[in-house]
Amino acid sequence: MSLSRVLGTTTVTVVLAVGLLGCSSGSVDGSTVKETQEGLTPISLGVFTSPSVAVIQAGVEQGFFEEHGFDIEVIQAASSAAQLPALDSGKIQFLLASPVTPILANTQGLDVQIVAGYAQNDPDTVNDSTALLVSADSPLKSPKDLEGKKVSINALGSIGEIGINAAVEADGGDPSTIQYIQLALGDVPAALESGEIDAGMTGAPWIGQVEAAGGSVLSDFIQEDGLGKNELVIAGNGTFLKDNPEKAEDFVAALAETYEYANENHDALAAMLPELLNIPEAAAKNQVWTLYSTEVDPAVLGTFAELMTRYEIVSNEPDMDAIIWKH
Image (cartoon, rainbow, N blue to C red):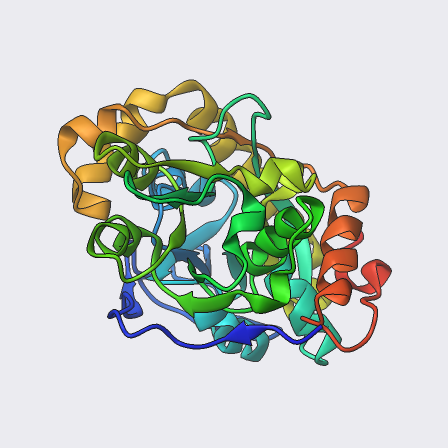
């Protein structure tokens, strides 16, 4: 199935090569680990611009990573795909991403594996995840109506592309006629209002912004396609994981404590969002949070792999045994 995928004309958020918390000293490159003078292992985690930044930053500020032996640097970018080369080379050791990113990378021979889960969405709550939105005056009523339309996703060949394709096909439509453009999640409200796109993939808090302007959710495709339990995962550099399995386990343990804190302290997370995402305090307070968990569900990841194969995001069937880190 041939899909129309082109870069959008609206400016996409550029990579912010700035660590929210920098390493004091030392370096990690692939399997090489040099501890700081304090005995901590410097490590880098890539995240994309979303409320996820607050979750990880909370873990840093609460000291969970330091307690498990890490001096962590958090590096923010517009999408996980933008940081994939750095993960493969070992310049960063871990990456927050849709499972699509590490699955695709592995099929292309890159040294990347899925280490831990991240986001588990509530099937009854749309705003805790990404969804497909339309403007107040849109004539589109169901996924099938997307045939021949211009639709934005935050990265080409991503969870948005396979998820929307599956939703359209399930509704009796032909997803090969969709024109996908790449647009940052935070740019979707303005693009819908201007008419630049017919529909756009975005997440909280921007879903609320679109709805406040009279727009609505056309498809909660993450849940409709059965992808919600592992919508987002943590991927790791394969060489680092192989050569430092105990440190990798310590990192997952630090994530588990971070997630536990995040699940129980939504107000503290929301207080970080105005500065981290440049959004109003009112929008931050209305943020709907997902459930955070390190659990990895092979069945859900298998669904990702099946959809990626069906829609020709990958040229050969992914080997999930090789993609999921065993520990």
